[in-house]
Length: 284
Image (cartoon, rainbow, N blue to C red):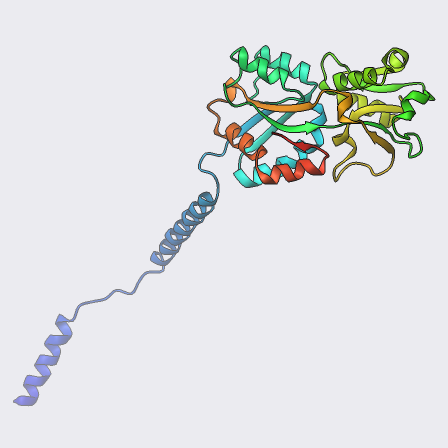
């Protein structure tokens, strides 16, 4: 009797035990798919957290003398901020005219202080945003290592052509004319002057041999990428007015966080160190 009862109880337990269906082969791929999607979203979130929340583009008008320096600054700025830097170069005078005519720039890096001030006065630039980012140096340069022997090279006059930028549109051209007048050489040398539209073109005239000498920006023959050959004389600063290069935030860039970030970067220690490599003196 007892044996029969035990047998019946085991039978009942067998009938009442819950049925556990093994997981189907279809469920496992769906779980893996959801896991992959989750990890993908997580990865994007992590990477996104390392970048600026609102990476943007800043369009900057840059004076020609600053071309090599701005190209050295570009990757450092973009790496530090995640913003994109778009550069347009030209003479300060021509860039100023373009800005006055509505060219789509967010910031202006001039080779003088006058044009940024005029833009501020005319309401085309943000009041209070103007600052001196560098003080430029003028240099008499030749690709010939034996050509330049100090300021006596100009007085000797044993050359046919002297390249310089147009004084009407380029601050470095104005400084070159002032220096020649201070040396009492402008009248004699004026017929030999070959004028470039901007300081970059003046440098090209000298580099190509179209002119034996060039009064150009020190930054064009200095810096990591500058050719080592040639001869030069750094023009004394007391022969011309200081070349105070100012930057200003334009009205079109007033609401552009990337533009403000770039101007902040330009005033920082990393940028100042790079500019010193190109022969610029620090701004005030």
